[in-house]
Length: 200
Image (cartoon, rainbow, N blue to C red; front, side, top):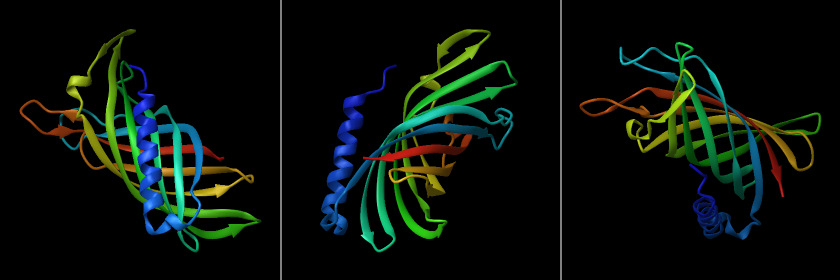
């Protein structure tokens, strides 16, 4: 399934307008792009399935930010994440999601001239596609995956160059991603994202 670029652009435009209309609107908005690694494991709280190990995927997209106050930034992002879950080394599930994080980023300190920030917030997620691969054969499992989910995010970042920042973020899924027979969901994701950001 191809990434719906038009929908992502519309979402980023709406985020930009929301930030502009906020009390931070008197400040200049900043924009940028980011991408990197998505390291995910799935935790099951019952006998539905064993917990998975950590598997590597990719994440990338864009962001818009506005200054709320001194050292405090409101930030919205539109990202596409490819997350992988490996069961018993023979079954690999790949779930592609459209993520919209809304974060507060605050300047914590400076290290040898490199700005260090901490951040936290909420992430809304929508499933774009999901496949399962067994023995080299892939099939869609989108019908067995919850259409949407939410996560809380905490993390930190450090400025490397004038326009380049490294960001590390932990996401804790609030609901299960797999549908259960009879209703409900199971399997919460625990994700670490390590990305590089470029501010235009």
